[in-house]
Length: 480
Image 1 (tube, rainbow, N blue to C red):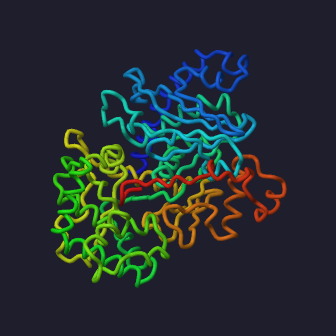
Image 2: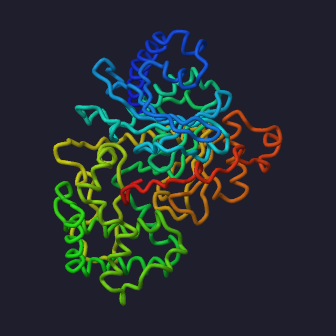
Image 3: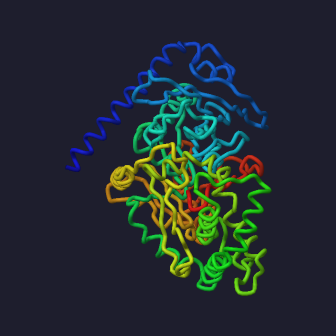
């Protein structure tokens, strides 16, 4: 039965690939030899790709940075049924350098930035906005076309179009949902990339079994810190009436409404229940010193700490709107964790609310069990030149990707004490050197000294405070 299902999935993927490849082949034919040979300016070469248009070019020393649109099929299996414009950016260094394909899994940042692998290999970077995140959304939006295969096919077409210009090695990378995106891309188009670096990528294989998260929250950090956070969270529900009065005032002042989640009370509890998770996702153990003592804290102090860590705007309609595509995916394919919080007793009225509560009711959703199992099985059995990096104190690392005996040149590494911002630089020295060396090797730019001794590995590009600024994705709380 499993073999039959795998064969069917492979067949479906093949059909989709042929459809996407057909469109790409037509595009390459339309471009003719001009795009590859007769044009010398990099901007002109990029814009010679059929379907590629320029939004703007922003200057940056040592690079050229383009914000672009690329015309994509709404449905890669039926490309004749319409197209949409997908936004991307291109940080151009030199066509003789490797290229890093970065995805956040959300909106694209239109300011020049380098991901860590781009800095390590001193390369070019292509950053792609995830489909259905505005403005990269088809109109009208058929939400059934938002799935991980369609998104991987978006990446495949962008890669195929740009590979004719950027001919050296390519690496895929991303953090959090972007790390998931890079992993799914590798699963469906494993011949495109020369390596994958996936940061803090959750792997919710069985959406109904979340005990790993419960175990995580009984051990993370110190007992003193855990107790302090739990007490504040409990106190926020004990003081629900006065704090919801403050919430209503804040909503009126900011124009927040709560039609999607249902009402202010549901939104309030959702914010409070995210508090402990959000602390460990974005804060460090040392930050626990700034958490107020629940027993003596004023209402304002409880409000302030919950607002700072969880954010009271998160579950208002205005806070949810940007992330509708994420919640849709969580409720149809990705899954979402549900954790037990026994310290709250009977103070919680709703428990962890499902993604369905955070998506407008006029958008249909049906969960597809087995999609994440397929990804997990593929990674365990087939990972090749893949690196997964997790933070020790990041809740999302409670369900990580695992590697089986059949994988080749692939690794899972954990940064001690790190949160959702874990990266190669935060690994222990030996693992940091090995990871850096592997990234250089996969990109085809490892110096001879590094090939002989991974401990000599170091980023090839000079540090740049602005370009290397880490824009940590402040995603919806309890979401990757």
